Amino acid sequence: MLVDAGFSAKAIEDRLGSLGILPEEIDAIVVTHDHGDHTRGVGVFARRHGTPVYLTDPTREACTSLFRGKERLESYRAGFPFSIGSLTVHPFLTAHDARDPVAVSITEPGSGFKLGIATDLGRPTSQVRHALSECDVLILEANHDQGLLHQGPYPASVRSRIASSHGHLSNEAAAQFAVELFHPRLAAVVLAHLSAECNRPGLAEAVVGEALRDVGYEGLLKVAEQDTPTQLMDVAELQKRLGPDQLPLI
Image (cartoon, rainbow, N blue to C red; front, side):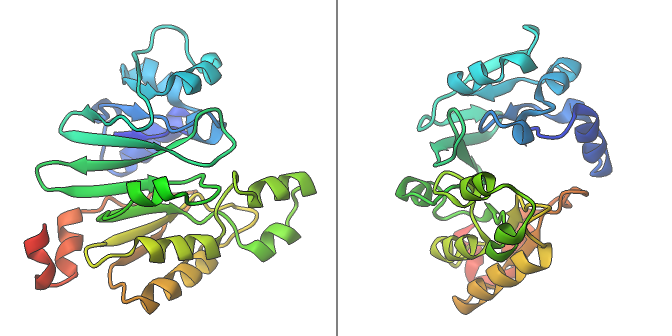
């Protein structure tokens, strides 16, 4: 499953190939909202490989120009889980300046493993906190460093939008939210959606890492960079690293 498709179809195919995955092995694309950095390649990829695309009706309306009528489009609604193969997708509303923005958690019923994917978060609402509780792996936005944002190249209106309650999480806000979501079974945190202009991977990792270490986090912390795909992760192996006390919980 792909969650969003913000690169071109060719770039997505190349990145999948570098991980040893054929495009035809992708069973679905789940689109979280209509912004171009999440949808750019979805139409071409879906037509080229016959991949079903799951999105809300308002997002579908906002993405009309990406589709040609030959794609298989499936509707979902925030708050209503749906299944793709053996996985259950739980979509939930977020605070972001898109038409109908959602984030998702994904569970594998057989193992109970839960993955949370939350980027484009203006602020972590109580609904978002609840939806992302008890994740085994968390992919969380750490979009900008506050100092770099205010010194950066964007106009004041764009800087204000990014820092607003419907924009993006700073490194500090991501750190605080990660601490709130911490629990003993959390095996990996991946920081994502970093701004190329207003953040640095080392800054994001240092700020979030220090906050997590202070609460006793011993799992994996990685930064997803823009130029290369993050290597595949084995959730079961990550859980084992937490120690034998955690194994009965899997």
